[in-house]
Length: 257
Image 1: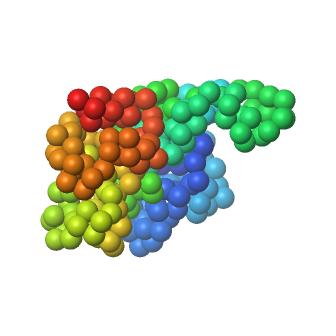
Image 2: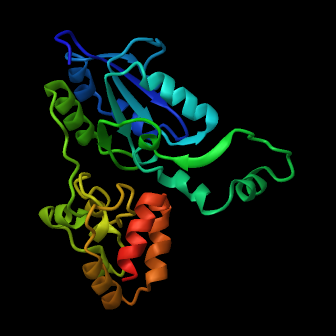
């Protein structure tokens, strides 16, 4: 990175902007960050729109030809690209669109309107279009992880996304396993990094951070058997955030062995 304060720009595509809102909600921590970076584009907190930047932070999935062209254009200006949140890192909830054909989805949403979105495409994560340097998973993201990634960018070193399950963080936080409460949780196969955010408050992990690289499929099947769940049930739950071709195909192959 240059010796001067790196310029950071936030852009969004198909998303709810909830992950950018999480960044804005960092409050004093975000103000501290501005001592070492210049935020030049961030619709959630400012009206200025800087055209030059070093670090590009992208929220949202790519779901149209226009999105693809715009992403390529803004990515060409950046030295570092960050995928912010589930929609950007894996396609997120928007991947549900891909479970049916585009024509079926258009019919479902727009009825009999003739070709309402002519440039629509299947949903894709941004790394299916451009090279991504840093990933911040989650829906929404976990604020402290965003700060860790920004620190790594400033130091010029990689950020290692955890490749152990949320269950590890759950045990570290001394939570009672939600399975013991009769609930269904995707923590055993979901990558950590959120400090077991939802289970800390008695809720289940919904898999928003995506599948760990080497899921303990046998352990998950042991849980299925212990709590009387079927493979189809767990795949249905997993589809909420991981209907994308990379995650779902990998998990379905493992769990059905």
